[in-house]
Length: 313
Length: 198
Image (spheres, one colour):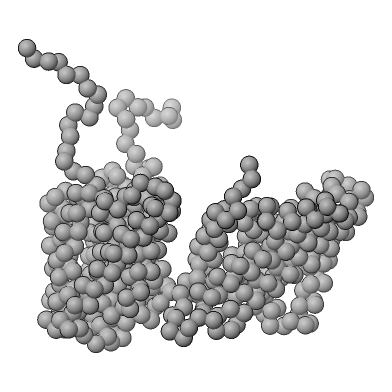
């Protein structure tokens, strides 16, 4: 005889957990880490390890100090540490990822209530604070030297944003000065493709972000396609669009909201770059500003529940 | 006498205007970039607070209720003008770094709050004690905040180099954003060190 099982919803379950999603993001970031090591030497790995260790440790200590459940098992601190390391130049002194991780985890994430409660992207705010505090270190990029693993000399070279002499191929492969994770677009796109395939992120935010940015730039430059492509491949746009702007807790949940969010990021970045020149941090600021607006977007794009009628007669 | 001491102490800790009542946040955020600014601003406000409390308390039976706010402003502005002229004459460097924020003591809400809620209802002596306690409470609070910001944001304290040469100052702390961050963290610290009485 068959038993009748009565249970409350949900009836469909999925194996996806916060932990599995965060691990996917880590896997997606690995190509960029490897590319960073190839271009900027072993020091890249050191910075990634220090940033991740500091992030996990500060979350652990915060949980202990405030007598909360230890949440480091969900891997989100590892992701934050990795993303922060992606945003540092390989020549940064080692205390920098430590300070950055503490800012990201304690000041932005844990104080506001831990995972899912951060009001802006932790790694991005940490980068913004580091950039505003130590601008000389943050903008002193090492010159890339493919395969020279022992390390490269730090030179205060301008980013490709300011110096237009790099070819599209160089920009795409990452043979340019810049922060660790912003240089090799090929590796970033590989990781992004993995995230899209695993459905960790949806296409809406990156597509709207890059699309609006490209359209604005085409109009702004009188349809100079080559220059627009260079602008897309320069600075933090690819990293930001796929890995930063898609953070769950600081971007809208509905598809329409995501499109508005991405479009806003693209428009802001265009305005910043077009009007104020060539800092590679502009992408961070564009996303941070939209992070703060995303609750409002959420409110406007809230779907109506079935049967709901408009309050206005 | 015991009462006076209790009123005086009230402003220092239990009802600290900066950390507990979160009043006067505009100077707290704006001028706390150097410890000398903090102590200068605090003492200037203390002077105004003590004397405006005294005068308002003496005049409390003569000021009609309906026009008490304009009357407070006249009294407070008088003492702010005195402070401003004295600082201009004897401490031109402080005058330069505090700038507009000295005349703005006129509309500092700590001074208004004490005039309205204390001096207007109490005799002169307790009013002086209250003004002194609140003023010194404000002084130590903003000196504390500005010390943190100056030491970590510039590596100096009262202009002296205190951090080792190798320390790279965290520039954001002496920028406006750093004011909010340090102020917030200082309130957290105070709430942890001296829990609120129920």
